[in-house]
Amino acid sequence: MKEILGCIKLAQEEFHMFDEGDVVAVGLSGGKDSMTLLHALSLYRRFAPVSFDLKAVTVDMGFEGFDLETLAAFCREREVDFIAERTRLGKVIFEERREKNPCSLCARMRRGILHRVCEENGVTKLALGHHGDDLLETFFMSMLYESRVNAFKAVTRFERTPLIQIRPLIYAEERQVREAAQRHTIPAVTNPCPASGDTKRQKTKESLEEFLRRTGQPRSHMIRALCRSEIVL
Image (cartoon, rainbow, N blue to C red; front, side, top):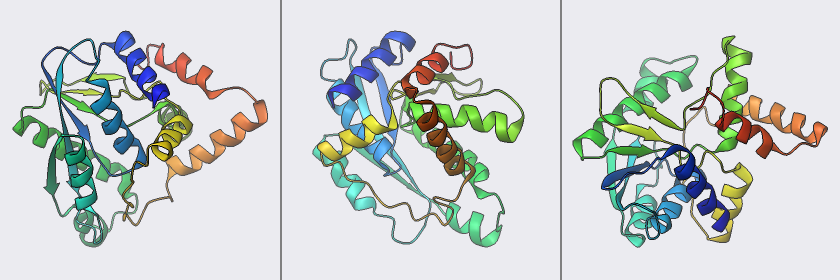
């Protein structure tokens, strides 16, 4: 966990993600990334240069078998308020609308719900569990599938809402997150989404892994390059 906390500390120094008195909510999906982020922030707030409150917000897609109780218990153990928003998104997207490419629509709708719930609960910063590997994959996906150069921001400000979106794990590699989750026995809730594992992102991930294996170059160089570029700033 020291490596993860070091990455969060670096992100704070580079991007000033946390301000005094912030109410920070982690978008808790139940996956290893968001669960590890919540655990790390529950530790980081003890020695952070500013004081902030910490919450967790989960959007329940309505899929059968989604384990909300594990998420609630995880938050209670860390004295973090847990907010679960139950929806019918899964049924609407996959059964009623039968979307051929559901991931983009799902992401937009979940993001909208997350923002609304955050605003209703006095949240000032929404922390997402995207790490450096996610950044690389998004960058390559934008070129391969959208014919543009794009990546998500470390800190995102919106025109219509005072809520600010942050990604404290942006300097962390997926390997570091996975190892931290294993070492600290951080649970992960199975994603019941029918599209899980069969996406453009998964294909990009596999291609990127092969590229890095063949070149023998550390992914940390690419992550740092993107983090310090105008694309991410």
